Image (cartoon, rainbow, N blue to C red; front, side):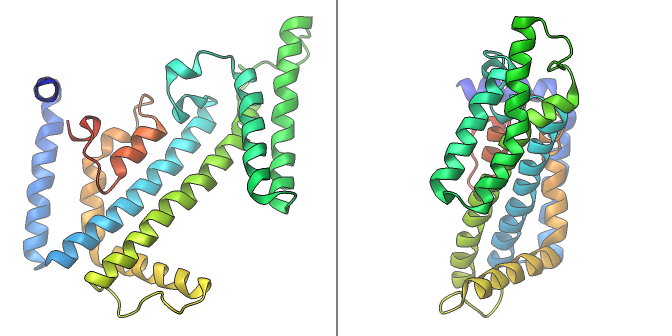
Length: 251
């Protein structure tokens, strides 16, 4: 009943959005009829739309948070307001360095993250000392470049993490999908890792070439997730999923 009430409220508040959804829905039906799409085409168009739009949400969320100089996009405003940015920076940098070290030890990647994270760590400590010692020569967190330096390590970590997670999910899904509804007459079994990546690239490129109109229509139906600062990275990922049925996405 709560979902119905919320849906009715949204319908009254945003009639242009509902009208756009209806237009895009029928446009998709016309497109499928005109192109004589079968089940295979519908499934692959959904797959490539999820891949392209979902990954674009990840990139835009992270870049937006970095340029805004606010970690709120990574979770939400309430949690972000509990601690000053300088304390958040110290905790996030420790977490990032610990996570990278546990997986890669003293590798080049860990050393690079250490170099990238050290300036933000030093700046965060400097901001704390500035407030305690009244050292006005140290820039505060109202300075955008300072905030960007502080958030750069966690931004890069999240970009790498979600790239691996999101693209990995779509890669595995594409293998099963190509097995049941072949888009290319090939499979990853017996291939080298490089050959497997080439296959994934072929599936992606061919899907974009065949189903780009569907991607455009899907992007138009998701314009509400591009601009509002209240939409967090977690919400964007949830709504870009192939199996997304949460109330935030469907109402």
